[in-house]
Amino acid sequence: MIEVRNLVKKYGNHTAVNGLTFTVEDGKVYGFLGPNGAGKSTTMNMMIGYLSATSGEIIINGHNIFEEPEEAKKCVGYLPEIPPLYMDMTVKEYLTFVADLKKVPRKERKKAVEEAMAMTNITDMANRMIMHLSKGYKQRVGLSQAILGYPEIIILDEPMVGLDPKQIIEMREVIKKLSEKHTIILSSHIMQEIKAVCDHILIINKGELAAQGTPEELAGTLQGRQEVMLTVKGSQSQTDEVLKYVKNIFKREFKPSEEEGTTNVLIYAEKNEDIRESIFKAFAKSALSILGMSAYSKNLEDIFLEITSKEDKKLLSRKPKNDEKTTESEEVTAEEAAEDSEAVEQENQKESEE
Image (tube, rainbow, N blue to C red; front, side, top):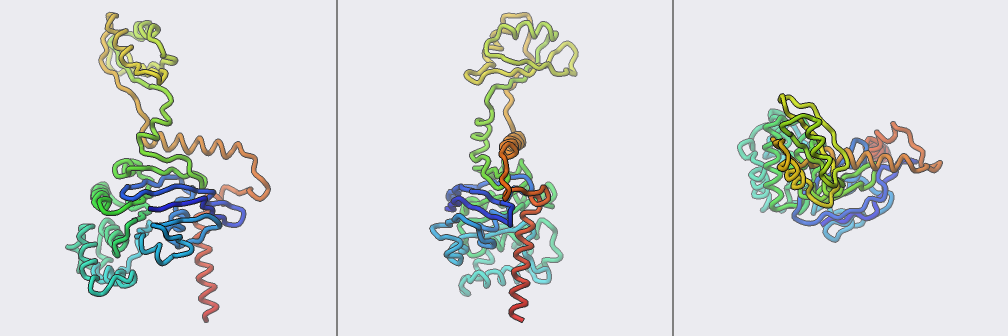
């Protein structure tokens, strides 16, 4: 289990992560969503111990990542957006090397490598040079290194990027297979993939947790009214006349119809009861026939856009303090600043050693 408590990460006057708090329970697949510059990668880099936090805590299976990094990191496998591969090694050589780095006992190393390859369906590629593999197989090799050492938690940053539709389907199946034994946190911009594999969704915006829950819970929260699409055999005026007598309808929008003699109308109604039964009874009493009727529900794209736009309006309505002023360019490149600062630290360390 992972507990993130009041996590804050600042770069000068810019706050990339602002008081983030959430819990990741065992045995579930979590989708981590957010627009570019929202702080997703910064948060994940702190969760794996690559970046320090300005304040706050990250507890992984009882170990504080900042106080007990070695114990906490044993519990986590990580696949960054660009897999850390050595192109001049074979798949088996590379995974054996990674197992050594992760301190997998020598007598268990061969078995661990074979199991990782089997889990990601790359056993047939064991003796192939990584440089000769397709993008999809390279992603699988990166996923194999993440699960070596049997970590309870696997964090995947944009694992579908650059894959073709067939490879995306294959990667989806691999992730589902891994979820049987691992807790998974998946960051992606591909909404249908998040919906296809995730049990729970965390939406982050401007470094803050904007919403969380299952796709159904998020849709239920935002769906404050009923929306029903109705197709009637009859004119617009006839349809409108019948709908006037249906209670709880507060808005009607007539839509273009390609079929002659029919009318399409989008009906908005209060959510206290299912309006479809009342509509059916009203038209049953008239001379008009209902050719189609379906309830409209928000998809994940609608949910994501609505939540992030609401949060943006809240943030814009706040009056910033002098030390909170940031430019648009700073917001977009905050996560890049993390990489830059890390590179500077490494360069300074190298120079001091020389």
